[in-house]
Every structure is written in C-alpha cells, then in structure tokens.
Length: 162
Image (cartoon, rainbow, N blue to C red; front, top):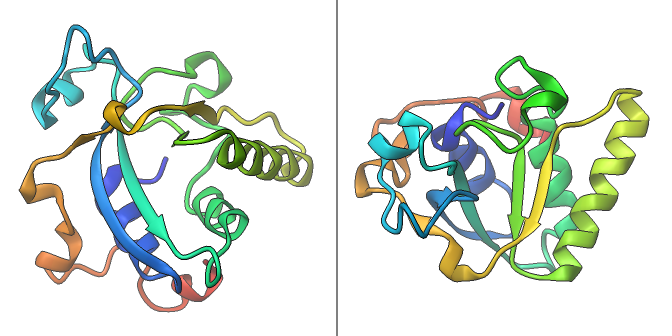
C-alpha cells in the first residue's frame, strides 16, 4: 500500500512536472455515500479508497513515468496483506482511477510490465471514472505532510528513486 493518501501525495508532488495534487476518495458507492468523508471511508462501508488526484504536465513528466513512480511507491502485489483475493476492497488498496481510455492503456501497460519484472501477479485495480466520481478529502488531509513538515516516504535518497 502507499500508506493512504498523505505520504503518496507528498511524494508525487515532488516529481518534476506535477502541477497539482489533491487528496480524495474514489472507487466506491457514490449512490449510497454521495459525500464520503474520512470516517465513512475508514469504516469500509462505502467501498471508497483514499486516492490522490494528480495534474501533471506531460511534456515534463509523461504519464508512464508517473505510473511507474506510483507502482514503485507501494507493493502492488498486496492489498492489506491479502493479495489478489482482496482486489476492490479497502481504503488502502492498489488502485489507479483515471479519467480517459488513453491513461487506462498507459496504466495497464505499466502494470503488465511491472508484473513481468516482479514475476508475481499484481492486484492493482484500474478503472476509468468521471471527474464526478472523485470526492475531495477534508482540508486537513490536503498537503498533510507539508503542513506538518513531515518528511514521509519521499524524503532523502528515496525521492531520487522515484
């Protein structure tokens, strides 16, 4: 997992070409939970995952590099230590929700290559969603690590690997 959205957002914001990031929730039941909040997402009843919406300049950071960095930030073979049998559940699952078919193709290709490289089955979920299927997290979750001057995953030499 990517430690939820706090450290993930912090690491992705540091990539050259990333213009903006916003933490939020996606992938769950918006009909039953139209305005999910952190408490509802943590309860597991909504089916939403903690996610980071990334706006990037593809002339500086192409989509494939962005996805490769995301894959390197977590273990895409595991979902809360349950592996493939837990795909699609939990707020910390390995998921990429994209807004178009082109990005889905880039993401699926990166996942397939990662799977070949690791020689393991991945449990990463990829879905095309509309922008309406992303719900912004509360203000306290936006740029959480920056506000608290935390170093998070992307500190020091680790950022060079991203």
